[in-house]
Image (cartoon, rainbow, N blue to C red; front, side):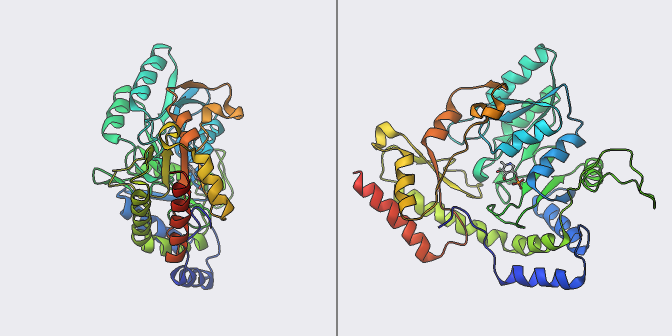
Length: 373
Ligand SMILES: Cc1ncc(COP(=O)(O)O)c(C=O)c1O
């Protein structure tokens, strides 16, 4: 049983077949336009630009903001590598920031300290890229004024957070530009794909231009910039439209799953759920955090027990400052991300899990807890 497999049904099939039969088998077409309009309406932004992955969206967002060589970009150390890679693609340097242990989201106090420190050193900061970890929004109430005071734009990496909200506002809508991912394991999928969402019309136009090989609007092939082939296919946009129609139902299922995990672990000392109590979280992945001293067992032992029953779990991301590829990068650390990496575990969270599969997971976890009592 997989951690978060695609949840695909007859609606997706009918949308895809309709798109295929329309003849628009290309990275252009009516499904693409409609998918963008529907996603912009959902997130509450004026613009949306559909691209081939969340990573491509991050890359374009940074480029469109003018991020490049000689600049630094603040990135949480606890994230998937794509967030940091996109910074490196632009020629800028990622600076890693530790997280709030309760949510795994970037520590706003450290962001503030670093912005002051970098300014004092005369270093240019091109952007701050907060990540809404596992579908729970960063505390934007606190982060946005800190970045605004420093005059640094925010690129919200909401790859995991579509459908989540913070104080009534949708994930993706907080920065100058937000980034979504429709990778196969996400809350909704186009098999692979991503989207930029923004209120900035000029920025959206720049991203759209860069995503289609930076072609000038003339009949012959004229180029004044280096562009990218990052546009999403019309077929995949059709798949995305069907998934978007089902998004609220899929989020509900993930939330119910989290409630069941919460009940299951409620009486277990030393175990809590990451970002528990955030009513706006989309519950993309349910993550437990184990205090081995109190619980008497380690997260990795539960992972092994479940793996023996062919139930997939995943560790929380290995922090970027511990990655060999970023060994020389600057970082500001408290140890929180490293502890979550050691003690956290993502549990099966897919919206497509059947009742029988859910019961099997819950029983396997209960059996483990019983054996450790
Ligand atoms: C936080 C985060 N950022 C960026 C990405 C990249 O998205 P994609 O896989 O669509 O390129 C992902 C997921 O894959 C992610 O989890």
